[in-house]
Length: 516
Ligand SMILES: Cc1cc2nc3c(=O)[nH]c(=O)nc-3n(C[C@H](O)[C@H](O)[C@H](O)COP(=O)(O)OP(=O)(O)OC[C@H]3O[C@@H](n4cnc5c(N)ncnc54)[C@H](O)[C@@H]3O)c2cc1C
Ligand SMILES: N[C@@H](Cc1c[nH]c2cc(Cl)ccc12)C(=O)O
Image (cartoon, rainbow, N blue to C red; front, top):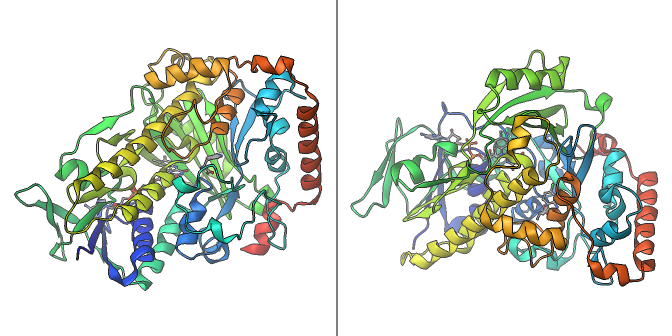
């Protein structure tokens, strides 16, 4: 029976993998995690997709179990500031797109939008976010949803099986190091063997399969399946097994970041229930509000900006609160391994692939990979088709998200610096170029976006195209023949629901002050 797993690396990827495999297979699987006491985790990775709740559900964890330990808050959207022009902003929310007479409401908005804000006209949550409110009332009840949050059929679905069934209204923001610490305790309590040591050598047999890893002080550690969670170093998959890395740098030039963890009195500041991406001269700055601090950082391209200037810009952006905070400069490896599962080694996390965190996809990649490992867990036959199916799924998710991120830059209207002008002339994936031509004629739908599961619905593409403002979008010609009354009623219903919620929901800080 093949059941000995060795995980190398103890960042978010390592401990999410260890905890999930233990939850999936219990004592029928033997998991050892070895992590260096000298090589630090990347130290960022704080905003997520809403799908991450399936991870916590799978582990049997409720929000009250883990959120307070991770200073976690809710994320209702990404707020894109200054991407169209300075002073402009829009939201990419977690909210199902409404349709009227077979056309998405954004199509009707292009025909007869009530205002110039597609997001506030077509969705409810942007106004809730603008008011700094919580999606849960002080008694913990969630705003009314087109589905029952606690319904049994919601449990046990993987993300790809769940896609499109419903849209949960929020994701999370949390301290990555505290989540890793929480999952360490969860994992060790369930039998994961935790070794703090440096892996100094990866040993291969004559087939090129991993036969063990040699550590500085704990000798050789061997198992059946090795999971590379060593971050950008990719010690096992790219270094030891020499699996090629496919760079996305030709279409996504941002390769650097500088991050600050800024202590903040959130009671005084208030909590914006969203992640903010503020465009800058050579990239963008993320702002993630947590309980007790703000996580922030400048993602940029070193060809356009030096690390020193990036840090200076970030400190000026944050203001005096950043004065005594140390900066964490990070080189980002953008792209993916050609295959993330090679022989008896699977890479998860940064070792497998990464794109800049513009839509908070790193932890989504980890979660998706872990679900697929559990689904394709091998036996002693080591059926190569399992590796083929796994690698295809991972490649699709990363290539799909890469296209979606490139769309942000292609569609962004601003061209006030060379960096932004170059976003309009830089190469884009051929498949995206074809889709863009279609979207200029008809708003994205499930048939015209990236065709394989990559975690995003068509309305995410609509938000980027309508928000960024650089690509002219037209309504479907058929709408000129259609009766607008039903769409006008839908817009009015959204305004009514928005009013009811903004008049009754608590402030985000008020909710967390009671529930942390
Ligand atoms: C600037 C930036 C911002 C990001 N923001 C987000 C975000 O908002 N949302 C999101 O979902 N994702 C985000 N990500 C991605 C997220 O940070 C990662 O997906 C997540 O941290 C997982 O990292 P990891 O565990 O793969 O690697 P790491 O955190 O780098 O961990 C690597 C581990 O390997 C160990 N290790 C390395 N070498 C050895 C060795 N020889 N022996 C033993 N152990 C070793 C280290 O000790 C460490 O424990 C961001 C990434 C970057 C770079
Ligand atoms: N499955 C993802 C898709 C998604 C839908 N809306 C958003 C908004 C943002 Cl900021 C990221 C991701 C998404 C999810 O539901 O999380």
